[in-house]
Amino acid sequence: MSIVHSYGLEQFQQDNATPHASRVATKWPQVHSSEFRHFHWPTKSPEMNIIEDIRDALLHAVENRYPPPRTPMDLWTVLKDEWCELPPRYLQTLVESMPHRVAALLCVRGGPIRY
Image (tube, rainbow, N blue to C red; front, side, top):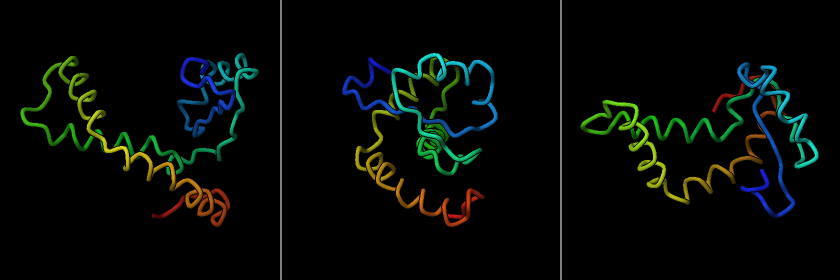
């Protein structure tokens, strides 16, 4: 966290999906809690996580590559290339969508959100 964010405004968040509830995943924030603020995310709400949108965009780009990646190293190279091709405005739009996402989640009292 201190390498990525050196401004003193660090905030940790995760979507409480089942893989993030493991002992290892829950222990790390507890051990390092003095280094950042923890944003408590609604339980199992992946539709709130903009990383899901980015992952989908990268997956779509990889699926449309010709020739497709054939080895793990090819896949890694393609993913890095596609990451660099994501328009900054796309990423900014995702960040700016958070107030709307939070409002929608509050309207459904933490339930699934239909977009």
